Length: 285
Image (cartoon, rainbow, N blue to C red; front, side, top):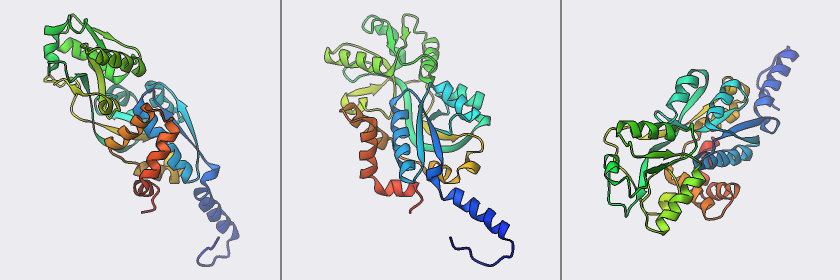
């Protein structure tokens, strides 16, 4: 190591060297990334994992429910989470935990949440659902209870007075399986969904208009980190702070997984195909 200038205080030099070494030795540091139970969280987490590993960090993925992700970052059990949907979808978690964690801002703009039907279904708005309860078998198919999507959909049932409908919760995989089966048989189905997602690459789908704006305007996905992470790991913090990509990027990763690639393989292919963007995150440009 080269130190400019001269000093007679060897202890001061040793302390400075130790501080610089700690910031330049990522292989000695581990970053724990929280991963929520959805494809968006998987795609961003596996991509940022490999980028951090390229920078020399050890990275662990911790697969958790959404509430645990927020709580884990606040408590310091997780270093970061890259799939916070704000301002509407994760509103209740931000109200509870937002002032206890550090938000690095948007890593993706132009996302969206709402009710979705196959393009062949001849309705265009949520307020038309009551006219077709029988065709939809009185069901709105959704994902895990406790998710922001479910919370907003429960409110939509109230606000639109969809008294003949049941919100069927389960998992993203289960919801998509029902969607696939319905489309193969050209049946009517309404699901809750979001953009980005590979389903729009595979099937011809459309959002139902939301005149009451229950699902809010366009969302964005944010990254947040635990208190003190910047001081403990400034290099990894800087990479996460620069992490920003487009909905089309995430959709590409998720669709590769749907076509058979593993999450690791899809992330690696995207990184290989986007060296300039990765270099920007790494601070090389």
